[in-house]
Image 1 (cartoon, rainbow, N blue to C red):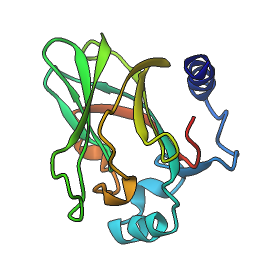
Image 2: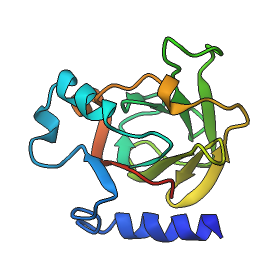
Image 3: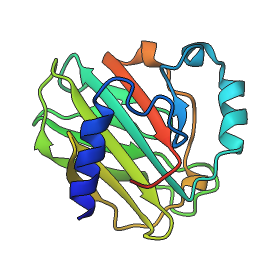
Image 4: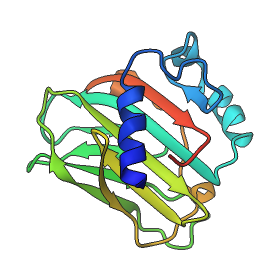
Length: 172
């Protein structure tokens, strides 16, 4: 059931402007002025963000295989075999210093846009990863988002294109 609900939400999110005025969008990287906010403004916003539940919705493409993008609180990488790897980098207070890595089952091609979503629920103690609205994987190791490395993404440094980047205050 959860996979069907997320597929519907991902399909709706790919329609321009669907969530633009909804309260669940708590950070829109493409809202007017959002690209120009500095790291200090982002960190101030982040301090007020309760991270017990959140989701991120990204529409992007990579120019080449092997490309890697820092998307703020996770990194996304297109591997040689066409799978995507999502890496959550632990913060300095994390007891287990190894990154949390989720890998897609489905493949994407360099130069083609795709929808990527990550989801966290403290209640379920799980991160999950979706590609084009389809469930890919989830973690087996518990890490809280308070201990993740959070920075404002710099879309200009991404080897490809990001056309949507939103964070929601719900685990979808």
